[in-house]
Image (cartoon, rainbow, N blue to C red; front, side):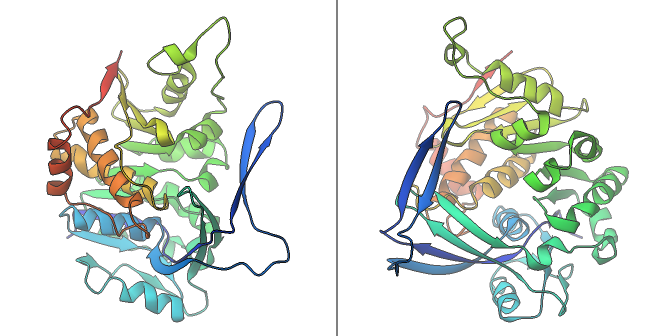
Length: 348
């Protein structure tokens, strides 16, 4: 029996960093967009290159295990050189691999991560087996016997199993944490609501929350200075639409602005925990899974759990690879102890 089961993707991630990368900003009347570019037709020199195993199912399983939970992972891989790398990466991890799905007819997920000098990244992703999880692939007995089911973002045909597994877990009194991905969100709110109905914790970034609710965060105007309010009213409206059950906690992450949470009565605001940024890949996985785990450790103290999640997310982005900088609970608590001014605030 496991404390936690994660379900999501597994990929072989190749990180590439080049000083020839340019950050190009493009402005229109209504928005600003940034692009990473390379000289067209040129042979680009690589300054740094490394490969790591990643994907939401892998990253979160490693994090839960690192935090001391008996953990099992559900993800799908092929039978190729990349699957060998995925399985090899778990040799020194205390994670149950009996629920992994391996199919020689499909290819293992693979990503090329182009890292900028600013630490942000552009990901070229081949979904492969990650987009092909079927209901018949899943060990529902393992889910039934777990305390927590963590659902990482899924894509392709794999999203078809989300409603079934969330409903099954809820019916069997298994705590459900749902980290919604853009593929699921693009199916529309009516589809998403079926999963939200069975989730105890829901985590999205601000862009995903906006896509799901169709609510845009308006810029400041002369009449209303939103920047002077503790939490933008449009984000409050996002929370109220996403929270479909009384027992739910909804979390929205907002990049460098930190993260927010809503329990139906209070809004919680937590700033980013400062630290070096080498690569932002895996930051969301570290934050969401740490928040879920910290809620139990902190007896459902939402604000404190946001702080734990922020600290561990800062650890994740401090190194190449989504799991290389992850911290234990003891390490997180030591960092918080050494920074007593770091805290959250509550807005009614």
